[in-house]
Image 1 (cartoon, rainbow, N blue to C red):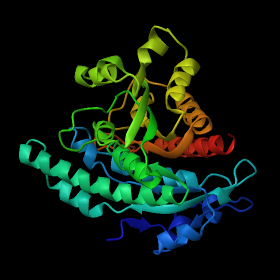
Image 2 (image 1 turned 90 degrees about the vertical axis):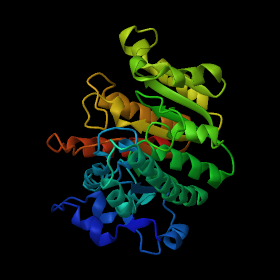
Image 3 (image 1 turned 30 degrees about the vertical axis):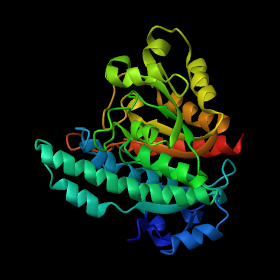
Image 4 (image 1 turned 180 degrees about the vertical axis):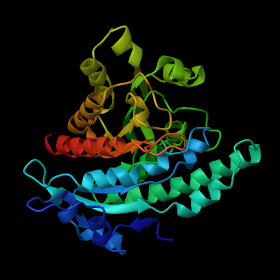
Length: 342
């Protein structure tokens, strides 16, 4: 099976709102054909943008569905940015999205109240893992940088494994997240992508910026306590409530911990105040601080990829929120500009 649903030039133009006297990113950005691997090998573009429209991993972690809805509005916002002097559009191309329609259909039939269905759901997450791993591995093997939008944070595992296999060594990761996502390896879901990658030796050092103290179980915290050479976090409360260190210093701690090896950049939109996400928070960092985090990570690490996870602009119980797509587009541009400004 071809694991990519390729977005053609025609698909991209349908999402682009053209205006006389202006040129939008979507009018000029490069796309690929169905023979995307061959096209990608011949391309000179550094960044490859694609989505993962799934929330199976979130549901397998007993979370709210909705993370499958982030990619389309994010891509639309990205494509409708102005093509101007502040960014070279030739640096990036739009690939499309990882094919998960079949898996989303299979997952929709399952009931989380049944233990056997939870097990099946977690088995489906493992299939998502394999598809993400294959795509990320190929892109990084070519020396390019994946820009990955959406899905649950379960996809961190595929990102890390794919990057590690491409480089044939363990990688570091920095994550901005209220949660460590280091739950038990009890079957795959959005809460244990990093613990699986760590136990399977794809992940070397892991730093988490700004966890929320009462939203992490003691078992996960103990794992960080027992391996301080490879696992590090600082807390939101230490920075913003008790003011024991400031934002810049806290971020510098995390960046210093991971900068010695090629590094994946992860951000969970749960970390940002009032952004529709799988676990929306009323007390988090600001959108500006999220943008600073992404920019500084791109500038101060050997960045391998960017993954923006858990955005859920369309949740069943609330009206659609188009600001989430716009914020994701900001983060993508901040990352690419930071990478270029090293």
